[in-house]
Image (cartoon, rainbow, N blue to C red; front, side):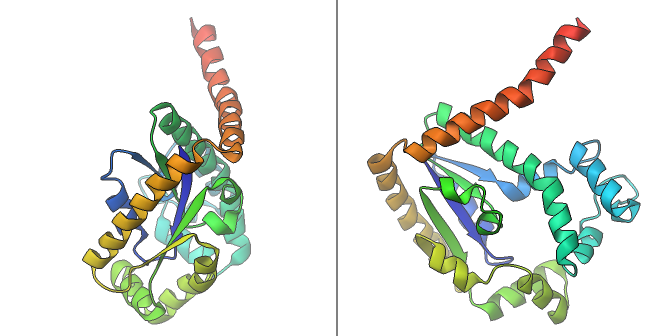
Length: 236
C-alpha cells in the first residue's frame, strides 16, 4: 500500500476528484475536511478549546460551530488562523492516521489523504509516496467560490489569498489535474492518474516511510485507546 496526498485550493474542485477516486474499490479516501467537521461537533474537546479561545461568538444557537463567523475571524487574521489550526490539527491528524492504518489492514492498494493544507501543515507531507494537486485558473476559482459561498469578489479574493498559491503547489506535485474546464475532462484525468497510482503501489509497496508511518499510528492508537479501556475496567 502507498499513501497519496490530494490537495488543491479552495473551490478548485478537489471534492470532484476525491469522489471519483472513491468509486474504485482499491482505494480508501481519508477526508480531512470531513474529519475537521467531526472533531468540532458539540461536546468534542476541540470545540470546547475553540470557544475558550475565541468566545461564544463562534457558536450557533444550537451549540454547533458557526463556520461563517469562524471563517470571518480567521481569514482576516493570520494569528487567529494559526491559533485555530493549533487547536484542531492534532485531532484531525490523529483521526487521519487511524483511518490510514485501518485501510492498511484491509489491504487497500493506496490511501488518499485528502487535505487542503497538506503542504502548509508539513507534518504529513513527508510520508507521502506521491502527491496530486487539483488546479484551476484563478478566474474560474474566484467565480466558483463566489457562487458556492455567496461571497463578494473581495471576500473571495481574501480567502484565495490566505492560501498557498496554486502555482507553488503544482510545482510540488507529482501529478496535476486541471479542473478549469468540464467535469468529464477532470474525471478522465482522474482515471488516468488512478491507473498510474496502482502501478506505483505495485512498484513501491510498503516503503520505509510507510513503515515509520504505521509505527506512529500504532503508538497514537495505544495512547488514544488505553484511557477508554481503563474507563471500561473502572466502570465494571
